[in-house]
Length: 327
Ligand code: PBG
View 1 (cartoon, rainbow, N blue to C red):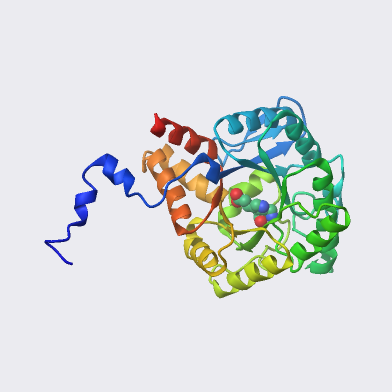
View 2 (cartoon, helix red, strand yellow):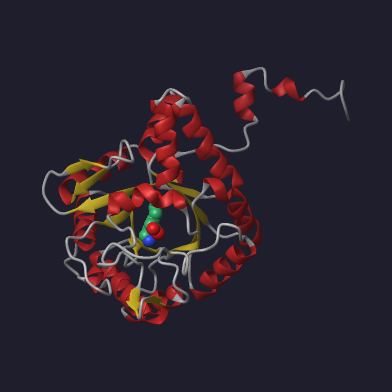
């Protein structure tokens, strides 16, 4: 069938009909809200390069979690901004650390919210790398030990899921094994499986104070030019016991999301990262793009590419917009 029998515009003219044939829809349940937790009381310090995002002390974080929950968002992803740092990041495994205390407080005060923790050493090492540095290099196998200890410590605090973001080889297996020996066989792992060495993480590193003090992360994070390699990363993580696999960043990597989803048919998360967020905010503040429309178009595209869930700093504002649409 071709024109004039076929006219694709027929289903576009009526807005209700148009929404009935919409193939991809967003729901607040699709979103995971990242939160930065810091020491102190009543603290909410705006992150300059991420308008609308703040570093929160535990009490403020609990309040924000309550709001996020009321908006219908399913989960939060916690990043700890630790006052303590050491050479190997071992202090990230302190049962009384910032993330562990935040998890306990949220679980005690907010019902029906999935609490996920980022498991990585970069927020806890003096040099800001994701692992232990031996002779000037990030040592893979030594890092596995501290990561596994950190994951078990988060499990003890009552977290619902751990998300290792370090990109060491074998870390999902090491964490899975340590969780099992500590009795946490049922704790899901969402692995940052295909995480690229990306310039889009800039604002996050300001927010978390985790920029590497020397070199960069290219020896462990992926080259942005590769997708076959992403599939290998994902396959290994699934074999090692990951329950959800993540592609990060999202926007420049929609093809990777698509390939991972089609190849493995397992739950896929996409991380709409800090730099992607900051670009939208900056352009919108200048009046160069329409904020809400651009935001929803981006989130819809990420879901259309194959993501089952989206980690995004836009979570709350997008949920509010979606709620308005339903009225
Ligand atoms: C920690 C980590 C990073 C992000 C999430 N976990 C930074 C990095 O790898 O340098 C980035 C998130 C974002 O940019 O929003 N390893």
